Length: 316
Image (cartoon, rainbow, N blue to C red; front, side, top):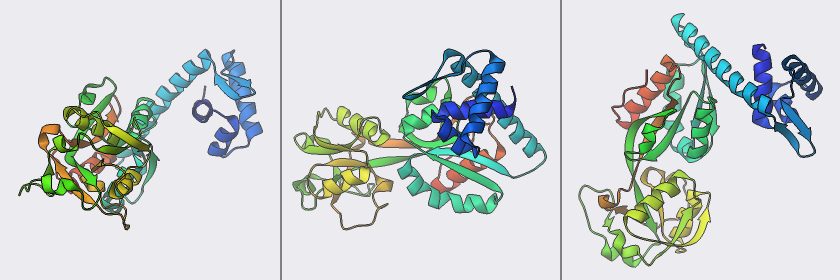
């Protein structure tokens, strides 16, 4: 069982296809098939069942995959630690983010990080927050930058540690000229007029899909407000929801820092939400609890803190 064997089996399982795994590994499909046959002969059992619909991993294959993932993770941690003991500021970081968070955050962080660590390559994995948590649990990420509920119980999860960086508010988007303007109140400590959600109980909503973190926060706000909304449309894109809200199809919630990511002709009325409804989420760094946290990763977290005003200590 060599490192090469472990990588081959893990990649085949991750891709669910020998051809896709071969493409990712930069080897020919026949060569990878031959290697897999050799590995199965050495193990003495099939790791995958070939069928008309593709590959199905066997029980022995699942155990091999689990061991391969653990061994490769330990070996990667060892390489990072040895490299840092030699004071080599080089290597690769695999970081997970949601697409919209990457759009907002990376242009602010990555140029400075690259200036400090020019020899460190970054592999970006863009998935939903729920999917990123699964990637962390499978040890396919060094860390993830994601949003979580304010004061989230997620931080008590057994396999993932969450380190909050900063808290930011959600706002309500509505069409220009809405009657809600006259119902909002001015607050010198708020960037926008503050609207009590009691005024929107009978309004239709456009929301992003269930399972997305923005939807989870939106549902939580509505729940605290005692509102069961009429949802006229769900979409995977918060910006689609935002533009439709500006056009009057329904109200929607969006993070304040995302409001101006996309430039375009769609503008509406925007309201801060009464703090009683807990309209916030926390920007967090998430790591697997037993992972080795390299100095380079810690520097990335320190940079996030310095840019966004957090006081979180980087994980050790």
